[in-house]
Image (cartoon, rainbow over all chains, first blue to last red; front, side, top):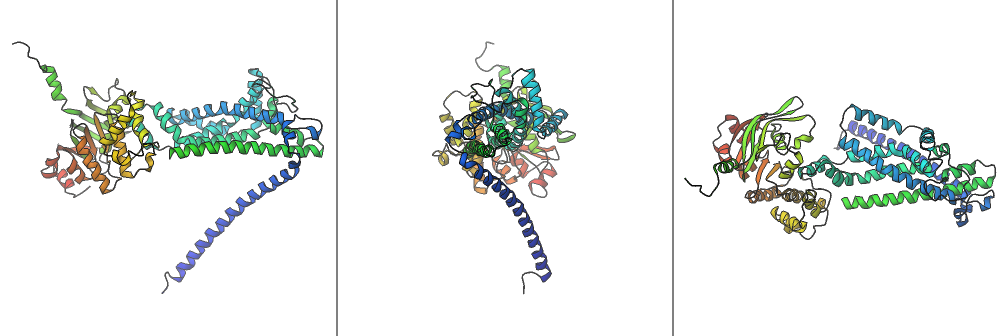
Length: 292
Length: 266
């Protein structure tokens, strides 16, 4: 006697087969993406690694490939990303907190919500034009690091706000109730419980947003970051260049050597990105453990 | 006649009055247009345990949450009538809901410790309310009152989430007690717990009675019969009967009450 009838077992086999096919399709898509990325990285490494040495990292750009380096762009990017973090994280997180915890759920909140979602999809060049008009011209901040950082902050704010709101939404109501039942005000509840509990999620959003900012070129070109900088910025009001711009500049030159320099630049950019993300993930995991 | 030392007439009246920790007078509670509690009046006696029983959806939890204004957070919830606490109506305009919740504590259906250490779970409430003395002593005292001290005294700085469900609920009780509330509200505090943890908490209620006024919502009639001094039976938002627990369970005045406590419906 069999466990199930023949018809039933045939039907079951078909269902299992369907599941397997679907899993295979998903795996194929995933691995082709990874493969593509691998090819890209390989190509860049082959071209760039021979140029990658201390000389490359510690030199200013030059007309001669063997003397050219990425120093000013690297320092510029670090300045830029630090300033972007300083501007965008407090503003983004406060906005998310306000919208989730304090603002009503009325029509106005709905309109703001839709607009923020739309802003996340606006092309970066548009933010560049906005930055040029407002920060560079109207506020007369010139083509400075601060103009660049403010423009970049505008660009990534929607991402930070949306991710932070999602993180705040996942904080269970029971935690808030517990705090309120002890005579906590809304602010005390938010600061001591909602914010710490949503911190890991907020950090994930910040990582994604800053990773986007570090690679953006268009808005920086628009607000007029320089392409050939033989000095280091000393303050937020100085003019600057950033790694994507330096890479763009090298790629657009006719000589093969400069193309290879661009590849080396990409490797440095990726390294900075990885270090930044690793630090953020380390902080996130550490706070996550503390919360558990 | 010369003035005799002792309480004045007004003070005596006040003392009489204070036999009740909370007085409900014609309380109606609405969710948007739905009436969840209909014209309920009874007194909650000081240093006694009052149980509110009734079938699911009868409005007992809603009524309980109105006693420390936790309903304020429910959108569309509205309370009418008077809830007299001390001298004041909890819902009058010059009463601050935050202050109400400080003085009337609450324990919830599912244990909800903060994702923090055991110590900080207890110390946080008093600290944000301006407690200035040493919290060490307070934490120890509260945990002892909740009969949890012996189990956790060596791991006060470990996460509260590592505790068992029953321990977590006692921690939540300790957390509420640390505020030294005048009234402690409990919303089915044992419904998520096993029988042994439940009996721990029931024993605890007896001990807490001497110091606190307790209102407990439960769908477990045996529990209401075991622990409470007074019982309110509600059905469909109405208060059907309120009396000494013994009466409710042996000689109820209303037929519906009898049917419910003998398990014929609910």
